[in-house]
Length: 165
Image (cartoon, rainbow, N blue to C red):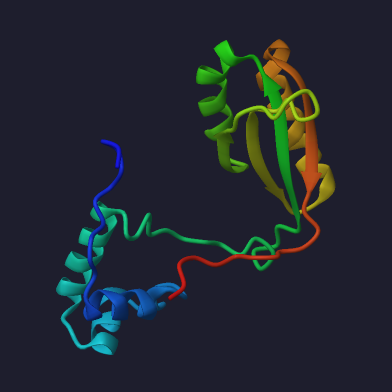
C-alpha cells in the first residue's frame, strides 16, 4: 500500500440502500433527499449527511446532472483530439475546457506516433455545421501550439450510466 492508496471505507446496509435508491438518479421532486429518505426509511437530512460522507470518502465520486444530449436536441457529438505542445497545455487546456460548447476536456498521455494527441475536448451541437464552427473555434484558440488534431463523431450511445450495485 502506498501513501496515496485510500483506506477502504466500509458501508452499511443503509448506505447500500441509498446507493441503490439513487443509482438511476435523484428523483425529480422539490425535495429529492426527503423523497429518497422516505424510500429508504430515514430522514432527508440523514440522506444528505450519508451521501456527503460517501462523497468525502470517495465511495461516491460526484453528484451531478447527466443530460441526455439527444433528448435536448443535440444530435451531433464530436470528441476532438489535439496534439498540443506540452508547455502550452497548462494554459490552453483550461481555456478550451471553459468554452461553453465543450462539455468535458481532459489531458491524456500520448500513445506514440500513431496517436500523438494529448488534449481531448467533447463538443455537442444541434447540427454538423454548428459543431464544425465550434471545432474551428478550438483550432483558432490552440493556434500554433497545436501540431494537429482529429475529430471522432459519435454515431450512437453505447453506455450512459453511473454506479450500479
